[in-house]
Structures are given as C-alpha cells and as structure tokens.
Amino acid sequence: MSVFYLRASCGLVLLALNGCGAAPSPPTVVEQKAIPAAEQLSQLVERYWDEHVAPENQISPQLLADSLSIERRYLAEVGGVKRESLDAASRLTYDIFKAQRELLIEGFTYPSELLPVNPFWGMPQRFAAGAERLAQQPRASVADYRSWLKSIDEYVRWTQQATLNMRAGVRRGYSTSRILIERMLPILERLGLDEPASVFYAPLRALPDSIKQPERGSLSKELNGAISEKLLPANRALHDFLQKEYLPRARAGIALSDLPLGAQWYLYRVKRASGTLLSPEEINRLGVAEVDRIGALPAAAPAVSTPAAPAELVGAYKELKIGVLAALPSLFSELPREDFDIRAAEWMPTPAGALVYQRAGLEVPAVLYVKRGGPVSISSFLQQAVPGHHLQLALQQEHADLPRFRRFGSEPAFTEGWGVYAASLGEALRLDLGESAKSGAATAEMRCAAALVVDTGVHAKGWTRRQGIEYLRAHLEIDDRDAQELIDYYAANPADALACMVGGLKFRALRTRAQQSLGGRFDIREFHREILRDGAMPLDILDLKMKIWTDASK
Image: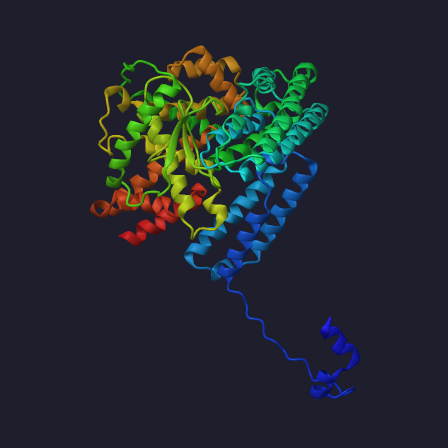
C-alpha cells in the first residue's frame, strides 16, 4: 500500500530521487542467469512427484483427464531439457523419467478403469490391509486415525465410481471375466459384515494409550459411525451390484484379447511389466526353453517339516532372519539401515506364495507378512526379504540423493527380477540349507518360467483356462485348487507375472557378462552395489549402465 501511495502522489521520497514530473530513469536491465540443465531437471522431477496422481485411484473421468494432462505436460517439459548438457547421474534420471512418462501416456489408450475389480489385490483388499496395518502400527497417532477416517469417505466414493464404470464397461463391451467376479463376491461379502471381528474395527480395538479422553471417546465414536454407516454399507452395495447386475453380463472367457483392443492392450501390458519389446510369441518360446532347462535340474526333495499356521511360523522366520542378516556382508558392501518386521496377515495377495513383502511408507515400517501356513521357505524369505525385495527397496528409499520418483517409485521387471535372483543366493551366503531348501530357488524360477508360457498362452495364443491349469499342474507339482488360483491370477493381471522371469534372466546375464569381462577383477560385492545403488530402472537402461560400469572397471 505504501508503494502505491508514493507512486500515485509523487510523495517526498520519489521527489527527492527523481523530482516530481521528471522523466523516469531508463529501466535497469537485469540479466537472468540461465538455470543449469541438471538443476532444471531436478526441479522438474520434484514438481512432478508433488503433482502426480496415484495410479490405483485413477478411475474417475476427472482424475484420468487430470493425470493424462500432467503426464503429457511433464513429458513435454523434460523434452526441453538439454540431455547432452547433463552429467552421467542426471542423464540416468532423464532417461528413466522420460521412459516412464511415455509408457504411462501410452497406457491411457486402454480403459482399465472399466475393469476396477480384482479378486487378488484390488482396492477393497488394499483398504482392508490398510486397516490391518493401522491396528498393528505401534506409533499410530491421532493424525493417523484422522487420516484413515478421511480415507473412508474417499473409499466410498471409489466404490460408487467403480459401479458407474462397470456399467459403462458392459455397454462398451468391456467386462471382467465371470470366474473373477465369482472369486470377488465372497471377499466383498466378508468385508461387508458388521461384526466385532471385522478387520475394519481392528484400529478401534488397538487405539493406543497415548490417545486420552475426551479425544479418545470422540475419535472412537466417529470411527464407529464411519465404519458402520458408510464403509460396510459401501462394500455390501458393491457386492449386491456384482451379484445381481454385473455377474449375468460378465464375459465367459479369461483372455484379455477377448476385449476390444485386447491384443494391443496385452502387448502394452507385456512391455510395461517386463520392460521388453519381445512379442508374446517370443516370450512364450523363452518360457518353454526355461521350463525345460529348470526341469532338467535335480528334483526337489520333499519337505519333511510339519506344516504350521502363519502365526506359528513368525518366530521361525525371525530366527532365519538373524542368520541371513549375519551372512549378507559376504555378498553386499551396503546394507539398508531400515529394519523390517515379520507378522502374520490375512489381507494380502494370495497367489504370491507364503510370504509377501510390504515396503515402508511415511511413518509405516517395512513388514514381511506370513500369508500361508506350511514349512519354512528359505528361498521365499531370500526373495521377499533379504537379500531380495527389502534389501533392494529399502536401499533405494534411503538414497536421499535420488529424486523422489526414483526413491519411492518402482519398475516391476527390476524389482521382481531381483527377487528371483536373490532367491538363488542361499548357497553363496553359506546358509545351512537342507536338500529341500536347496531346490527352493529352482522352484521359484520354475513358477516364473511357467508363467511366461501360461500367461502368453491364455492372453495371446487362445489357450483355455483348463489348458493353463493342466500345464501348471504338470510343471509345478501343485494341486488343482492352487493351479486354478494361479491361472485366475494371470487372468486378473495380464502380463504381470512375466516380470520375475524376464527380470531374473537379465540379472543373471548381467552377472555372467561382468564375470567374463572382468575375470579375476570381478568383485561380487561391487557388482551388487552397482546394480542397486541407483534404484530400480527399465532393463534396457540398466543394461547400458552396467556395461559402462564394466568397461570402466577393466
């Protein structure tokens, strides 16, 4: 206001400087310093992370439009950065960011929002798992519970939008397979029951003592009301819609290629999951070759330990964790500071096996969930925990020099491939492996290899569900029920299962290339450090990065 007054009235200050009515002095030309390309890129990718929309929430038309606009805008912006002016680390960020934006933009061609229900790991199951995690979180605060209370309203809106989308999908020829809807109905029925044992009341039962009255009472009342009057009815409404209206119109087949644009859609999902431009036919042949190779290895000895419930296995896995952590320095020069807990859990993806890893989030610790009963699986522990997913993802998040989209993002083929590679390191870690455990890594590889054959067979080669089940039973030594579960998982998540074998083969090939190139100079600890130090990335970018490292190490 004072500046406006002085300029308007030609007051004493301006009079003293210029004289009232005198011609103004020529404006001073301020030379703006050009922002270095690396700094320009850094600012750009950090702005993106603040602005982007989480993919799992993108089912409303407005969110989809907003997200596509964001992706296009940032792709255009990064194209304006002079890549040739960047240092090596910034070029890596540039290449990863650009490749991810291009891939995401391509994905908007295909209406995945019209198929929002997934019986293996969809929004209802994720929300249930979130309630379970909140109840188990020792550092839960009033703010955590308030945030969860707000998320209930967001979840209810999601169920309503999902219903609208599925109705639109039926009109346009996009419907989910009938067998998947039949799998989803009992899940929603359970998640809609208003009973004290409901997972959604678990956070209330676990209110920490640090939350005192009267806030404790008011918070409990609000949560109770939101669960019983909003959340549970929303799940019941979604269940009734699927059962009465959607199921009779759901498609009989399970192949993505049955849908409009289905063949092209599957090609896109193959590229997204596996990070490769291989065709489904080429991937199928690769899978057949890998199944033959792994099948020629010595047969697995039968497990002799007595199967136990998940809760009983937690202690056994905690003991295994101690031994593995002690052995890791022999193969890894850098280990994560972040620890991980081991817990029994209900609401986690079922086909993933006995163990499922949940990476750490804001104020939420990393957790290895024991999903299924049975004997202790050393190879599953190596794959899901250390030196597998936890070691890779925790190190990635702890590298504060990486931009956030790289620290907290993911690349399926890298992460899943690293897990399969890690499962093979038991003997190198000099763990006390029994005959059964020694074959665990081969079993994990066989499952990934069979997935290459069956997934492409179903979605690209016209296989029936029964053909897929028979192939899995013939090569994985599983019963009909487990084979049905696996084939339905492939149906619900086309191409996702390709990531582990394609990625695993890449890590194996990179190690072989480095060993052959470096000979006696090859250091396994330095190789692992270089593989992991820049976080997950597309496999072609990883290949080039490791070639540069190998050449420089000669």
